[in-house]
Image 1: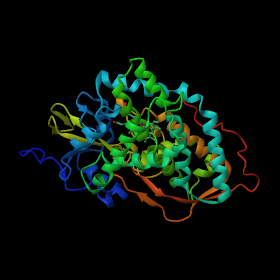
Image 2: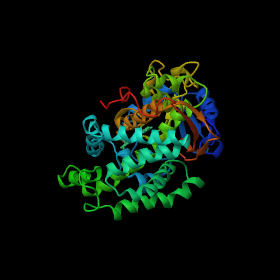
Image 3: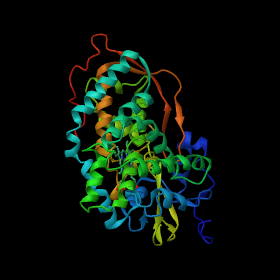
Image 4: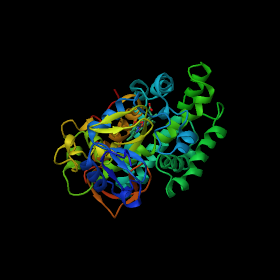
Length: 415
Ligand code: HEM
């Protein structure tokens, strides 16, 4: 129990059980109704899901620390996350984040726009020609090839990296069967980065090359290079894949949004934001409480942990109104969701994710007239990620032309 004298809300919900991972929203609704902070007995952590409270946790790093707190277990915090930008605090965090921020700045990304857009058009045309396609396969090819190339690693490493990146996300959760199964794969990724990647094997001018240059210039330590690499490999692939496939899932079927996007009355960026508000690709991360504090009326003791649920915050009716569970792209303030984090640890790669998402959504909407389900999708189960393993879709080609006729005027340009 949290404290013996108080009747603080507590629950025996297992947030990481298969059925909850497949559809976490009924559990979130229960927990959101119980109070601003609910003690999860099974995981010995406070669940924070209401929008304003998640915001408070993310923007007060001096009280809610990522250091030794971002994962639920001490073992994962020490073995996989120690030394990474995600787990760093204060000045050290600023120092580690700088080289990543440079690579992911609006300026740096501008140079990538033509290539990303033309790949999107090519893949959209390919999918439209096929008619039926697995959206997860398509989006994985689009996102992962690009990120692996930008990182400067050989293309052949892509399947291994994708598999092991998801394994690292399992390590943020409790020590359950999924965690145990993924631990060797997550360890293999760190070993791969440590042993196979070096100054001579990375592509000159790539993200990894820039990290070695930052180490040579003394901006970061030599020991910081591998943990920083893992930030790219872990954070930059599955997240965007799940975000774009969530958007495609919500667009498919009898609704007007695909048509509106095609007619350029609906911004693909609004579609993407709404999709990740509803289905946050990263459902939650932990924080360690450094001093006694309160969330609402609930006392949270120093050294306890909280689980900030980006996923639940996107469904909080206090923020999103009665139709919080509905897909309504373009809703006022829709981009204020917390799926990309907030505060000092907010997503360093959000501009790239948005550029990739809007490029592909735009290209598909220009390429086909209708998007429909073509079979039952299957969930990808992961302790932290939320998305699809397979998502069969059908796109109907434009009878007049399958060419992308009007360029990319609705694609978001990084700013
Ligand atoms: C839809 C796609 C994405 C989603 C939903 C997402 C989600 C997030 C979230 C929720 C955080 C906050 C972590 C925290 O609060 O502790 C974060 C941080 C981060 N993301 Fe993303 N992300 C996405 C894409 C990317 C991409 C494409 C990259 C890089 C290539 C990236 C790199 C990072 C890094 C390096 C951090 C750590 C920042 C820090 O600790 O200062 N992300 N992301």
